[in-house]
Amino acid sequence: MELIGSIASPYVRRIRIMLGDLEYKFNTVEVFSKKGQKLIGKYSPTKRVPILVDEKRVLWDSLLIAEYFSDEPIDLISKKELVLINEMTDAGIQLFQLRKFELDLNDNSVFSKNNLDRIKNVLEHFEKREFKYFYMIEEWLFCTLDWFSFREVYDWRAGHPNLVKFYETHLNDEYIKKTDPRL
Image (tube, rainbow, N blue to C red; front, side, top):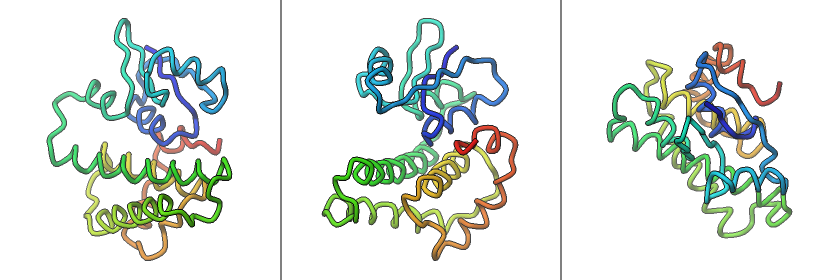
Protein backbone atom coordinates (compact mmCIF):
# COMPACT_ATOMS: atom_id res chain seq x y z
CA MET A 1 0.00 0.00 0.00
CA GLU A 2 1.27 3.46 -0.91
CA LEU A 3 0.14 6.90 0.15
CA ILE A 4 1.15 9.73 -2.17
CA GLY A 5 1.11 13.26 -0.85
CA SER A 6 2.77 16.29 0.61
CA ILE A 7 4.03 16.36 4.18
CA ALA A 8 2.46 19.80 4.66
CA SER A 9 -1.00 18.91 3.32
CA PRO A 10 -3.70 18.79 6.00
CA TYR A 11 -5.60 16.32 3.80
CA VAL A 12 -2.64 13.95 3.65
CA ARG A 13 -1.93 14.36 7.35
CA ARG A 14 -5.47 13.21 8.19
CA ILE A 15 -4.89 9.98 6.34
CA ARG A 16 -1.45 9.48 7.87
CA ILE A 17 -3.05 9.79 11.31
CA MET A 18 -5.80 7.37 10.31
CA LEU A 19 -3.28 4.82 9.01
CA GLY A 20 -1.39 5.03 12.30
CA ASP A 21 0.83 1.98 12.61
CA LEU A 22 -0.39 0.22 9.47
CA GLU A 23 2.40 -0.71 7.12
CA TYR A 24 2.48 1.53 4.05
CA LYS A 25 4.92 3.45 1.89
CA PHE A 26 4.63 7.23 2.15
CA ASN A 27 5.69 8.73 -1.17
CA THR A 28 6.22 12.44 -0.55
CA VAL A 29 5.78 14.73 -3.51
CA GLU A 30 6.27 18.43 -4.17
CA VAL A 31 2.77 19.29 -5.34
CA PHE A 32 3.72 22.51 -7.13
CA SER A 33 6.61 21.02 -9.12
CA LYS A 34 6.25 19.66 -12.67
CA LYS A 35 7.53 16.27 -11.52
CA GLY A 36 5.06 16.23 -8.64
CA GLN A 37 2.14 17.23 -10.86
CA LYS A 38 3.06 14.52 -13.35
CA LEU A 39 3.08 11.83 -10.64
CA ILE A 40 -0.14 13.06 -9.07
CA GLY A 41 -1.80 13.34 -12.49
CA LYS A 42 -0.89 9.70 -13.21
CA TYR A 43 -3.32 8.65 -10.46
CA SER A 44 -5.80 11.49 -10.00
CA PRO A 45 -7.62 13.54 -12.63
CA THR A 46 -7.97 16.35 -10.06
CA LYS A 47 -4.18 16.44 -9.53
CA ARG A 48 -4.68 16.75 -5.79
CA VAL A 49 -3.42 14.75 -2.83
CA PRO A 50 -3.79 12.45 -0.96
CA ILE A 51 -3.75 9.45 -3.26
CA LEU A 52 -3.88 5.91 -1.95
CA VAL A 53 -2.68 3.04 -4.11
CA ASP A 54 -3.68 -0.31 -2.62
CA GLU A 55 -3.07 -3.29 -4.88
CA LYS A 56 -5.17 -2.47 -7.96
CA ARG A 57 -7.29 0.19 -6.23
CA VAL A 58 -6.47 3.85 -6.57
CA LEU A 59 -8.35 6.31 -4.39
CA TRP A 60 -8.05 10.08 -4.18
CA ASP A 61 -9.73 12.43 -1.76
CA SER A 62 -9.38 12.05 1.98
CA LEU A 63 -13.09 11.30 2.50
CA LEU A 64 -13.02 8.40 0.02
CA ILE A 65 -9.85 7.04 1.58
CA ALA A 66 -11.29 7.39 5.09
CA GLU A 67 -14.42 5.49 4.03
CA TYR A 68 -12.24 2.77 2.51
CA PHE A 69 -10.53 2.20 5.86
CA SER A 70 -13.59 2.64 8.09
CA ASP A 71 -14.89 -0.49 9.78
CA GLU A 72 -18.44 0.67 9.13
CA PRO A 73 -20.04 3.27 6.85
CA ILE A 74 -19.64 6.89 7.89
CA ASP A 75 -23.06 8.16 8.94
CA LEU A 76 -24.66 11.20 7.33
CA ILE A 77 -24.22 13.49 10.36
CA SER A 78 -20.50 12.71 10.51
CA LYS A 79 -20.14 13.18 6.75
CA LYS A 80 -21.73 16.61 7.05
CA GLU A 81 -19.18 17.57 9.71
CA LEU A 82 -16.31 16.21 7.58
CA VAL A 83 -17.57 18.14 4.56
CA LEU A 84 -17.67 21.33 6.65
CA ILE A 85 -14.05 20.76 7.61
CA ASN A 86 -13.18 20.09 3.96
CA GLU A 87 -14.88 23.32 2.90
CA MET A 88 -12.98 25.30 5.53
CA THR A 89 -9.72 23.62 4.54
CA ASP A 90 -10.33 24.31 0.84
CA ALA A 91 -11.06 27.96 1.62
CA GLY A 92 -7.77 28.21 3.53
CA ILE A 93 -5.81 26.50 0.77
CA GLN A 94 -7.29 28.86 -1.82
CA LEU A 95 -6.26 31.85 0.30
CA PHE A 96 -2.79 30.37 0.74
CA GLN A 97 -2.38 29.84 -3.00
CA LEU A 98 -3.67 33.31 -3.88
CA ARG A 99 -1.03 34.75 -1.56
CA LYS A 100 1.73 32.32 -2.59
CA PHE A 101 1.30 33.12 -6.27
CA GLU A 102 0.88 36.84 -5.50
CA LEU A 103 -2.63 37.04 -6.93
CA ASP A 104 -4.25 38.58 -3.84
CA LEU A 105 -1.68 39.31 -1.15
CA ASN A 106 -4.06 41.31 1.04
CA ASP A 107 -7.27 39.29 0.67
CA ASN A 108 -9.03 42.18 -1.06
CA SER A 109 -10.80 40.24 -3.81
CA VAL A 110 -14.40 39.13 -3.49
CA PHE A 111 -13.14 35.55 -3.83
CA SER A 112 -10.76 35.94 -0.87
CA LYS A 113 -13.39 37.67 1.24
CA ASN A 114 -15.84 34.83 0.53
CA ASN A 115 -13.22 32.29 1.61
CA LEU A 116 -12.51 34.23 4.80
CA ASP A 117 -16.22 34.33 5.54
CA ARG A 118 -16.54 30.60 4.89
CA ILE A 119 -13.72 29.88 7.36
CA LYS A 120 -15.28 32.17 9.97
CA ASN A 121 -18.70 30.49 9.65
CA VAL A 122 -17.32 26.97 9.95
CA LEU A 123 -15.16 27.93 12.92
CA GLU A 124 -18.24 29.37 14.64
CA HIS A 125 -20.04 26.08 14.01
CA PHE A 126 -17.26 24.05 15.64
CA GLU A 127 -16.75 26.54 18.47
CA LYS A 128 -20.21 25.52 19.73
CA ARG A 129 -19.37 21.81 19.56
CA GLU A 130 -18.57 19.65 22.54
CA PHE A 131 -15.38 17.62 22.08
CA LYS A 132 -15.59 14.31 23.95
CA TYR A 133 -13.51 12.13 21.64
CA PHE A 134 -10.59 12.38 19.28
CA TYR A 135 -11.69 10.41 16.28
CA MET A 136 -12.04 11.22 12.59
CA ILE A 137 -13.96 14.52 12.81
CA GLU A 138 -11.73 15.82 15.58
CA GLU A 139 -8.55 14.62 13.85
CA TRP A 140 -9.55 16.38 10.65
CA LEU A 141 -10.45 19.55 12.50
CA PHE A 142 -7.14 19.50 14.37
CA CYS A 143 -5.19 19.04 11.12
CA THR A 144 -6.90 22.03 9.54
CA LEU A 145 -6.45 24.29 12.56
CA ASP A 146 -2.80 23.29 12.80
CA TRP A 147 -2.30 23.87 9.08
CA PHE A 148 -3.87 27.35 9.39
CA SER A 149 -1.31 28.13 12.11
CA PHE A 150 1.60 26.47 10.29
CA ARG A 151 0.95 28.37 7.05
CA GLU A 152 -0.26 31.52 8.81
CA VAL A 153 -3.41 31.44 6.71
CA TYR A 154 -5.98 32.41 9.30
CA ASP A 155 -5.83 33.42 12.96
CA TRP A 156 -8.47 30.98 14.16
CA ARG A 157 -7.60 31.35 17.86
CA ALA A 158 -9.14 34.79 18.32
CA GLY A 159 -12.65 34.46 19.72
CA HIS A 160 -12.58 30.65 19.81
CA PRO A 161 -11.61 29.56 23.33
CA ASN A 162 -13.32 26.18 22.96
CA LEU A 163 -11.32 25.42 19.81
CA VAL A 164 -8.10 26.62 21.44
CA LYS A 165 -8.71 24.28 24.39
CA PHE A 166 -9.49 21.40 22.01
CA TYR A 167 -6.34 22.11 19.98
CA GLU A 168 -4.02 22.43 22.95
CA THR A 169 -5.41 19.24 24.50
CA HIS A 170 -4.20 17.21 21.50
CA LEU A 171 -0.87 18.84 20.65
CA ASN A 172 1.09 16.00 22.21
CA ASP A 173 -0.96 13.08 20.89
CA GLU A 174 1.33 10.44 19.38
CA TYR A 175 0.20 10.64 15.74
CA ILE A 176 -0.22 14.40 15.86
CA LYS A 177 3.44 14.68 16.79
CA LYS A 178 4.55 12.01 14.27
CA THR A 179 2.80 13.81 11.40
CA ASP A 180 3.70 17.41 12.31
CA PRO A 181 4.66 19.15 9.03
CA ARG A 182 7.17 21.32 10.90
CA LEU A 183 9.46 18.34 11.54
